Image 1 (tube, rainbow, N blue to C red):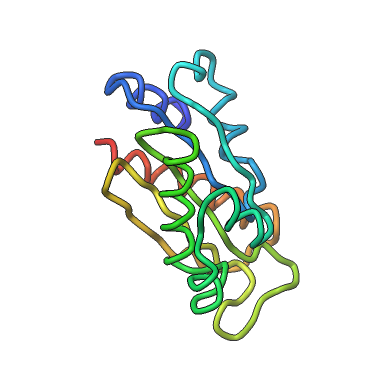
Image 2: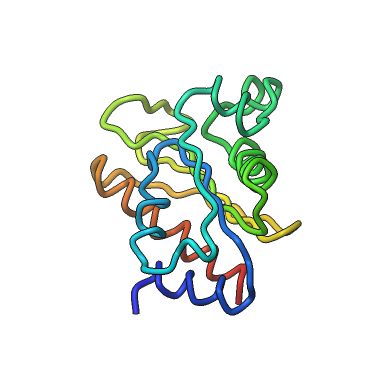
Length: 155
């Protein structure tokens, strides 16, 4: 069984709803979740927040958080996940923000750095994904990690 099917089964069993807040993954998590037949029973929607303006306006990420920690940070993805649950009225959310590449990295946050948050009600777990395997693979790895983290929260 595929990861997105396992996530769907867990959400359906527990009668929970899911939303996504995606930056560097560009909606890939939402696309994978909705590729499962019947996903409308648990998936409310997703917000692709590529710009900081959208992160602030739709997900209520604070300007202070973005200024102090940057868009690619534990603090930002935590606020993105909370914001998605609030905006889309869900029990669970996953959020991603990172540097997919090939450019855009820095010494502190090299290409391939992605912060991921998985939230279930008041519990939020975060993970810093590292390592540059090329843009497509960096995104794909983040999608899989986000779904695995959500599975962990739901079990």
